[in-house]
Each structure stands twice: as structure tokens, then as C-alpha cells.
Length: 81
Image (cartoon, rainbow, N blue to C red; front, top):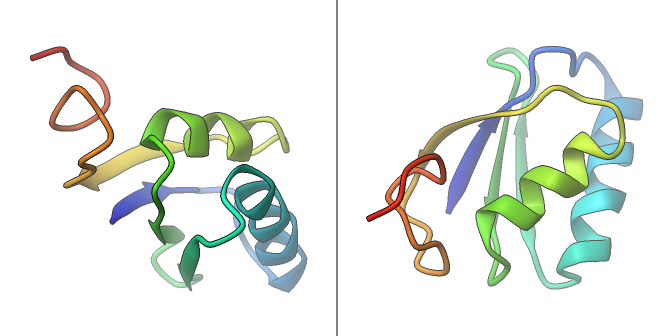
């Protein structure tokens, strides 16, 4: 499970756009939105970096909140082990 901060996410339209982008990367991904916190939690077999790139490609600024992504070569997606 990876959680992304998406500060510009404000409404259901944002949710639909982000869902479409994530599902194009991993059709089996489970996505949980918290509009108040402006976060998207994704349970996916795809690497977190690919998910982040998919969301960024829709025009949203994205930062990683936390990760226990087993498909990544780092603990948070920003550093190398």
C-alpha cells in the first residue's frame, strides 16, 4: 500500500481522473481516496513510481506520504537502498 499526497485534488472529477490513470497502470489496483486529507492510498502490484507517474501525467502534483511497497527498491520511493 502506498499513500500519495495530491494537494490539488478537490472533487469527484479529480477522483475519476486519478482512478482512470491508476487503473490504466494496474487494472486490479484498489484505490482509497480521502478528499479532506487530499490523499490517495493505492494497493497495487505496480511499482509506486509508475503509479506516481500515471497520476502526474494527468496534471496533478503528487508526493509520496509513506510506503511499504514491496515492488520498489527503496523504502519511500525517493532514495536507493
